[in-house]
Length: 361
Ligand code: B12
Image 1: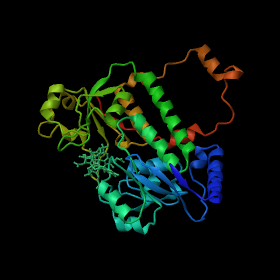
Image 2 (image 1 turned 90 degrees about the vertical axis):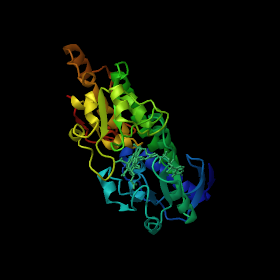
Image 3 (image 1 turned 180 degrees about the vertical axis):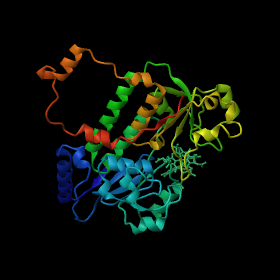
Image 4 (image 1 turned 45 degrees about the vertical axis):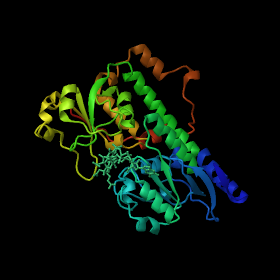
């Protein structure tokens, strides 16, 4: 990355960033401090699709063109700098109140220009190259993330973005918490026999996930395996093929557009679907649409799916008297430190959404 910052401003920015990070906190990062109004300096970065982007320092006005990017901006505590987002940016609830610039595929360039953004965040996984090109033509910088293929790539991408936005330590904290929860899940379900599932991205036509997508990886981490083994990202599959493979469960996100989620009960009545054993015996798992978004909250969706598919792995065993005593009165050297460098509760809260519904019978 090249930097074109003025020394004075640079140190002011570093001081502000240091203050932000040393205040212990993602708690502090809930609302980033106002930034100085000195004239802009730029940093030249290469975005995740290989484009050279001039990023004003600091970034004061962000427009996000994808729900995943909006959620990431909030998780990094930069929501006060988010001046616009899309009609689909609905999480957290506050994101609904931001000025809307239209859809992700077809945003209004006029609206974006009117917001005077320093930086527009786009993703190759949802937006169009034409949008990024049009913004460039208008002299507006846009930074694009990749379309991640794994959950690990989501975490790497988040860390890169946090660096570009000037809050690398907030990114590192969010990443650590995601890793911790994923490791805990691995302990619980990693050794269990994976449930064979069909993940339904879209019902008409039926679109599922290829094996090299972040959703297929999310399924694996939840103790499941997709019955679709396609090399394509988002393959269209026939019900006949699904019937041949007979998944144990169908997995749905609770919505994927303006339309409400397909009422799973309705599926049984649709032509073709009744040939699936999972439909006839109502073996469905419905999870939050966070699973469709490569952002921190995907961990919550993975946990939720794992709980629905492997409920026994989450039953807390009753502690015997001795273990309980030891837990309540641990030896002094094993007691938690009095001060956390950030609040895990706040972070956990930030990454948590109400869970999905168990539909499996
Ligand atoms: C598969 C799919 C997904 C997949 C993958 C998305 C994708 N890559 O297309 C997943 C499951 C992840 C997904 C997620 C979501 N989706 Co979706 N999805 C679809 C679906 C069913 C098919 C799209 C498709 O065929 N993609 C394959 C091709 C087109 O995409 P691609 O391989 O990635 O290639 C493109 C990019 O690489 C891009 N590109 C190439 N180089 C570069 C470089 C740069 C810099 C950029 C920016 C782009 C770029 O150009 C390529 C061609 O367009 C459509 C509905 C439909 N039937 O069309 C909805 C659709 C695109 N999804 C939609 C929505 C709303 C969502 C979600 C917001 C749902 C939610 N509630 O969370 C999320 C958003 C995820 C996020 N990042 O925040 C809407 C978008 C509406 C709109 N007008 O903006 C659609 C149109 C459905 C609908 N009718 O409402 N979706």
